[in-house]
Image (cartoon, rainbow, N blue to C red; front, side, top):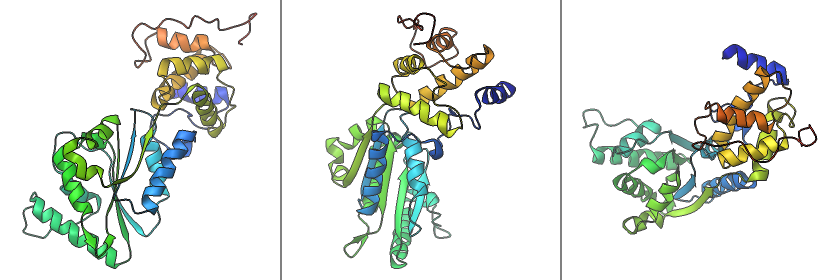
Length: 297
């Protein structure tokens, strides 16, 4: 597979793999929705919003936007990142301490929430006295339970006079937004001053996404035909992570067949061969013809 990957890069004149699955801010496609998401994250930070929410479907690009945002956080902001909140475990204060590198008093019970809260309060006030703000970012926050969210809300109540000393940024799947709107979390919801929901890409967005990533990797934006991009949108429903998987496989198939371009027929073959596991059950080929008078339309 490694050799095939190297060969397909040479075959298409690419300098890097354009559709790698790992989030890479350098490859971020700036759709209007992604720009909106970044703008709201920056708004939340600049206005000192106690809590900012970023939600979106699985694979919509939340984590990539998040890492781009983190790269631009000013130096006077102390940042702690919890990259994968675990489900069903109410240890959020301990994880916040670890993310901010807050040491608990020696001899104290390390799993005592009161000790953890006290240590965090001392740290936050010390950072404020030093002229620094503190931002805690939690990815996959839909895994947090009600008690964990309440512990986080209590942290946002720590202040120095009229100044709040902690900001939270929670990123997660749509159920995070639904959970925050529950009646028993009304006090938490009242502290959400900035939020954005990142949708899937529409048809035009998928075409732009594919072209932009190819350009960034040093290739030509028309390596994928318009019909291939349309079919990819149908199959993936505009989810960037799935687009990456399908496009990467399609490039490999096109290279193996000695083709200089990815057509709709190649995309359909990837799906029919069962190598793209995210495809809906039993998808048939697109009924529209892949060519017009023998040429890709």
